[in-house]
Amino acid sequence: MLENIKSPDDVKRLSAAELVVLRDEIRKVIIDTVSKNGGHLASNLGLVEATLALHRCFDCPRDKIIFDVSHQSYAHKLITGRYERFGTLRKIGGISGFSSPAESEYDTVYAGHSGSSISTALGIAAANKRRGSDDFAVAVVGDGSFTNGMIYEAINNCAEHRDLNLIIVLNDNEMSISQNVGGISRYLSRVRTSGGYLSLKHTLDDFLVGIPLVGRHIARALKWIKDSFKHIFIRDTLFENLGIPYVGPVNGHDIGRLETVFAEAKRRGGVWLIHIVTKKGLGYAPAEQYPEKYHSVGPFDPEVGVVCGAERTFTSEFGRIMCELAESDESVCAVTGAMRDGTGLTRFSELYPDRYTDVGIAEEHAVAFCGGLALSGMKPTAAIYSTFSQRVYDQVLHDVSLQRSHVTLALDHCGIVSGDGVTHQGIFDAALFSSIPNVKIWSPETYAELESSMKSALAADNVCIVRYPKGSERVYDRSGFADLGEMTYLAPRGGSPDCVIVTYGVVAEEAVKAAQLLSEYRVGVLKLLKIYPLDKDAILPLLDGVGLVYVLEEGVMSGGIGEKLAALAAEHSGGARVVIRAVDNEYIPHGDRESLLRLFRLDSEQAADEIRSLLRGA
Image 1 (tube, helix red, strand yellow):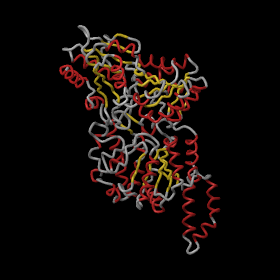
Image 2 (image 1 turned 180 degrees about the horizontal axis):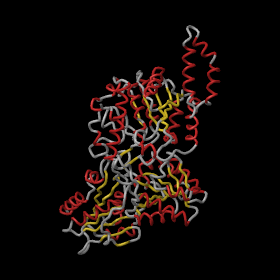
Image 3 (image 1 turned 90 degrees about the vertical axis):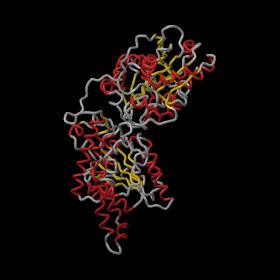
Image 4 (image 1 turned 60 degrees about the horizontal axis):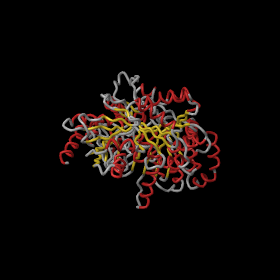
């Protein structure tokens, strides 16, 4: 059936029986594609019916649907003209695993971080009103995102703009990535048990208003009766206390019921919050049973399911190191934002539950919270993905560094990240945080360097950042490197170098390969472990008299480590020529790592070609 669905208009023409067929086919295509390409599985399987109901009730792309985070937009992609390309999901040149306006007019924004959807939708709704349009903005928000503070800033603002056409769909599946935590989760759990409220509210409204001539007057006069019945089932919701009409909980897998509720909210207009309850992983038994395990997966055999082996990764090594550090030091503690498994802290949380805190999807709070822990004598480490750490700049500056608090940030998924695309690349952190006073940054390339970096960070003071990549340690011959403390140096054979390649992190493998390809020249490789502040006393002697310093950096050029090295060389080493190869004012799309390295000329072959050209030109 999907072959015949070219737009949401085709979905609107389907009968109830045909919708069931389409629903099942969408789930099958999602399972088949994700099992081949990897991607987000459980969340997408849970939102199929709601996606179909939304597109049957609203008129997209005139009405705007914004998926918070947007990794749950696969069904939306399949019914908005992208079925034929869906097999290219997450591949370079293929369709994104997140919403992407470059792909389709049905995708409103790029979205890969939690909490921004209601703010964006509210802005769209305000603009619609100002230009005299009755179009709607719809924000689809998972309950996990309701632990993010930005959501409440937006909801507070919604209460002042109740005349705007804005629908907030709270997708309550009792999970974010890890199990939801905190008071909001418990609150929604209580609301979830009050299913009688919705039917009573609508029945009483319709009955009172339907009485000819006097119905509306009676409705107002007897409002206290309705409220009294309502309080039998549930107290006023948080949203209604803020002035936002609330409907729910609604079965998020009943397309007919969802259509009724969405259509009624659309008919009445204004701001509405519709609370739907869905099941993550619905339609694939392993994902239903273990939704956290199937949140984001690599390729797998759908007949067997995801097999969790004992693969050694930087993430798993970080978890091991944290447990060992905590065993020897009772002040060591760990904080994460709904990413216990994703940051490798599962074992830590089991061994040291009194020193482990999951704050929900609230990275800003996590870092400020760590600042408070540090002020009281603890040694906190905030484990966050690099792409989400962009949100904590203010907290690192104001709540930690300015206070001289000793907090460590462990930034996972640094550098180029395959698969997830523009919103999830870890290329900005070094440039971002090196602008803050008294920050120290390490970028290990090996597991051993990760361990030494964490120990150095915990023994230091103020803000310490240890950044490391997704996946496993790169395997190649490092035997020629000389250990120079917090850097290593691979000297060329045959005398003083014609060129020194300066690098850090896992792209060092490409630097070594480039040096090997340049056998006609003497090329050294300087690999930094502590990348900021730069140790000029150790670095400058290695660059003295070198004609070309070539920086190979898996990060952004503007404000990056290469620019800092160039400034250092210009000031202290007699004007050595420094050429920087980094990501220059661009976003990195989705694709496999090797293809992305080639795309941004960070691979060994293109680095060697550029160095050869520069040396010949010199």
